[in-house]
Length: 302
Ligand SMILES: [Fe+2]
Ligand SMILES: [Fe+2]
Image 1 (cartoon, rainbow, N blue to C red):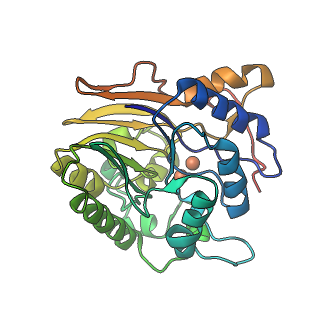
Image 2: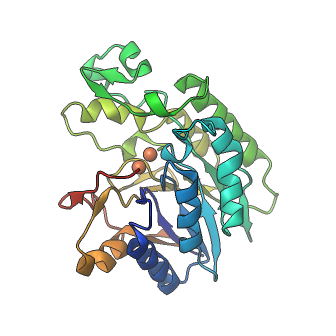
């Protein structure tokens, strides 16, 4: 089975990223995968998410989406809440545009199941040696550095409670798969393994790393021998690690945009191609690192 995967497009509104979306779709069509997965963070605006998915949908394969934290930021007019977005409206927008929102129901393809979750963070990725008291993580602010979910996520759960909730849903999904399933691909926005996180020995970067994911989620995956691949977004630095029998990758595109003439090669680097066969998992041309490191930061996203 062939999978094409990408995340964190952070699409500009008002057709500002039309060429980017066209290029991604063209690249995925060229790859001709069985499954195209996007691991979240298209837009904090549901109308932009909807338009983007309609432009990205590839006819010849299954199209799967998992909401990212930006996708569940509430709208400025307060017309919808984070929980409403995650549990209802993102799923509706996905179905309307030919995508399946994996957290709503797993996708089955032969003996392989795709199970999805936004995942969350419980500060277990924090750098303990920095000795920053837990309350700073809970308040999402330290020395002037703010983790922006503070202002844009409006559910009542603490982060530890949210992590636990999504973990329990993941356990439910894993335990209710059909009996013939012997391979599981986990698709999430937040990271299930600390080893995927890139620390930089500087602040506020390493403070923000605490908001990348939760180790408890990875433990659930490690306990299930059927899980062979984990695909995530959120961290804007691409990485690949092996944890037991699981190949785990992050596939972000990121905030930067190249000049027009470099767009297609940028997209080629961004779309990961994964082959699952009985010989194992192979991701031959995977590009690691920050694809946007030398690019101008596109700040206007609303
Ligand atoms: Fe992102
Ligand atoms: Fe994110």
